[in-house]
Image 1 (cartoon, rainbow, N blue to C red):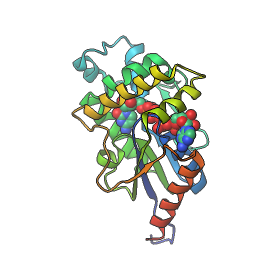
Image 2: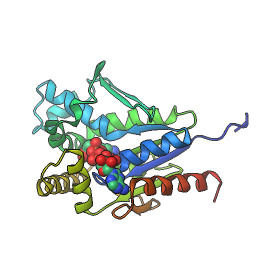
Image 3: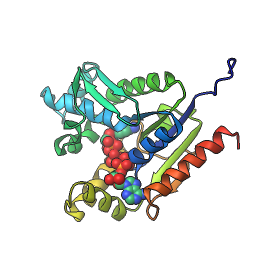
Length: 228
Ligand SMILES: Nc1ncnc2c1ncn2[C@@H]1O[C@H](COP(=O)(O)OP(=O)(O)OP(=O)(O)O)[C@@H](O)[C@H]1O
Ligand SMILES: Nc1ccn([C@@H]2O[C@H](COP(=O)(O)O)[C@@H](O)[C@H]2O)c(=O)n1
C-alpha cells in the first residue's frame, strides 16, 4: 500500500456446527488485531425477527417477502462481538432452542442469503487491518478471494460432547442428532450450501485442543502474510 500500511488480510473460516469456528475465529482475530464477524449470528438474528414478527417459517415466500425489513447490525470487536436487530440486543435470544431449530429453514431462502451476503461483504470491505469471517459459505460464496480459507471439521461425537458440555450436560445422543440434522439441512440447500472451498485448508479438530487449533490458524495467517 502507498503509505506503507499492511494490506488488510481476509480470513474465511467455514465448517459444520461445533467444529470450533467461533472460538477459534475470535481468538485468532484478537491475537492478530483483526476484526471478527460471526455470520451464523446474522442468520440467527434474521430468524429471531421472523419468529418475533409472526412470519410463517414453513412458507419460503413469506420469509422472502420479509427478508429486507429488519436492520441487522454486527459489532466486530473480537473481544466483545455484538448483534442487534432494529436496535434490540439479541445476543441472548438468538442462542435459544426455538431459533436454533428454525435457522436452517430461514437461511435456505435465497432472498435471505442475498441480503445477509451483502451485509457481510460490506463489513469485510470496511475492516481496516483485516477480518476473520466465520460461517458456512464464506470461502465458497461470500469472500471467494479471501487471502486464507480454512475448513474446520471434527467427528460428530466430539462436536456433540463439546456442545453438551456447553449446554450444561444436555443429552449427548439428542445433541448429536440435532447437530447432524442441522448440518444435513445446511449442506443440502440449493443456494450457497455448507461446503469446503477447493482452495481451503482442512483442519480436523477432533483430537486437537482449542489452543492447538488457534495456534495452527495463527501460523497459517502469518505464513500467508509473509508471502509463503
Ligand atoms: N478443539 C476443541 N477442543 C475442545 N473443545 C472445543 C474445541 N473447539 C471448540 N471447542 C468448544 O466447543 C464448543 C463449540 O465451539 P464453537 O462455538 O466455537 O463452534 P462453532 O463451530 O462456532 O459452532 P456453531 O457453528 O454451532 O456456532 C465451545 O464450547 C468451544 O469452547
Ligand atoms: N455463513 C453461514 C452461517 C450460518 N448459516 C446458518 O446459520 C445457522 C446458525 O449458524 P451458527 O454458526 O450460529 O451455528 C447455520 O446452521 C446455518 O443454517 C448459514 O447458512 N451460512
